[in-house]
Image (cartoon, rainbow, N blue to C red; front, side, top):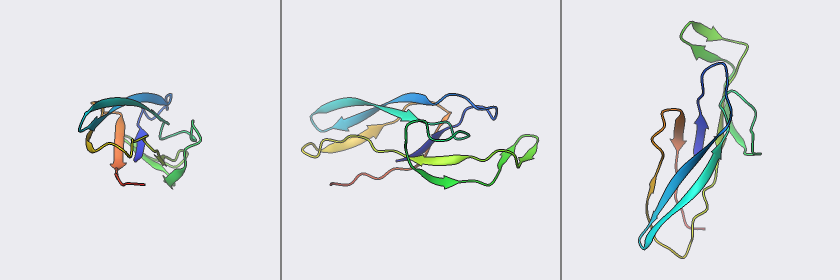
Length: 102
């Protein structure tokens, strides 16, 4: 899962999101701790992409850069995943999501 939380350009705290893993036999809620895109990783997660600058409503800001971080969700390999329900939050940006068996 490649994701960031995009707080205002002035920065903001990392956030906790509740992700619902929809298994064939019921749902499980997992907490995903996501760092702010303008900060260093807050939870030791790897940076998978970093910009040289950011674009703002008033123009390019060469004094700040942004990052995309990688996360793992705990899935039960013995259960069949039917879907994942993501939070409805405009600050959470998901860039990629892959589900695979270990």
